[in-house]
Length: 238
Image (cartoon, rainbow, N blue to C red; front, side):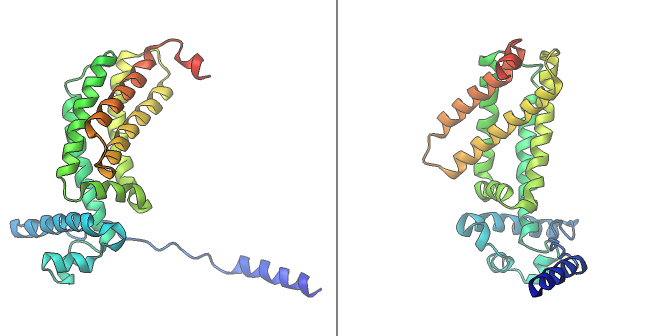
């Protein structure tokens, strides 16, 4: 009887006890700098954060470390960034924008999808530039790791991927008007995700032959994208 009563009490407690709300983490910058001096401070904070990421990684990074390295008081930092995740988000957004702008500049010269050799060459040029941009960016490799590893930051990476994939999709539709549009959109997303992952791999394992990895993934993505022009493609997948 006591066991039955205990079960009833637990059920009632579960119904009456309010669920704990997930802690909200502020990710947006508090103030956008308007004056030249403020902009210089803002940019310096981000550069210091990127360089610290290279030294200590995401877990050990803290606003106190950033303040110490930047020569700022905590209130001066918190004027712009409420926590380290807001710093990481802003770094991620800046890196993604620079990468995306480079990709879009290449895509402006593309009209439709070429053959495997043409698409391989295009992919190679784009990926080579994206890799160079990431290396030059303060803590670039670690910023990419943070966007992948920290759930609250994933939206930055996903928004970038979807923007690029949408442009790949529109280019592919011109060339393959008979292809299933849903399949094309999925294909564009997969292609961009794989090329993004190749950059992550190159940043994570600098001992690898980066040029070879870039060439191989460029060819792989080209063969995949051009396969949408194959009328037998869907049958083979089924």
